[in-house]
Image (tube, rainbow, N blue to C red; front, side, top):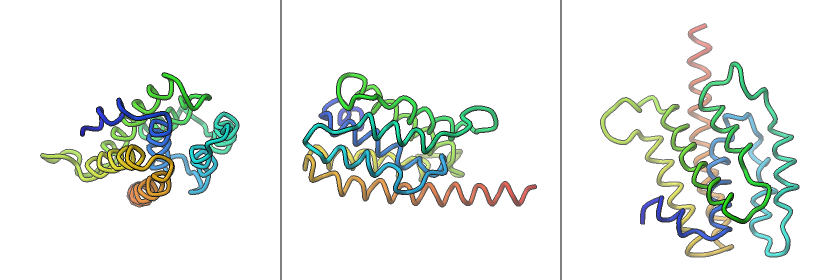
Length: 176
């Protein structure tokens, strides 16, 4: 099934996990600690009344940045993913956010991939697409039990992007 079809068929938990996973993988662009999104992941595992809005507000406060001048497009896309997260972990806004996060995360990976100008899919973009599909497949197949493996997939992607961001910064420092 295609990524678009998976998002269209995802339930509330799948949509929230999909958007959150995209944001999680782009966390290195926001200089975020690896654990900053854990409380949001935890709300998805809780079948009781989760405090998504409260946890989201704390994450936004923690990751607040300059947001504007001097930030490149990849960083701005990551900031938009966080800013546009709906306060309610339900409803049509959640589907819109998950879809937008998917597109933004793919764009971030395209911007950061040094092989993006080659023929065929760029490796970073192909890896991100594979991770997005995997997260949605895990949640569709396993429900709440798919959250832990989805988080592991996201963590792997975050490590990859952190390495790319680090290499990019070293390259910039060498040119100065």
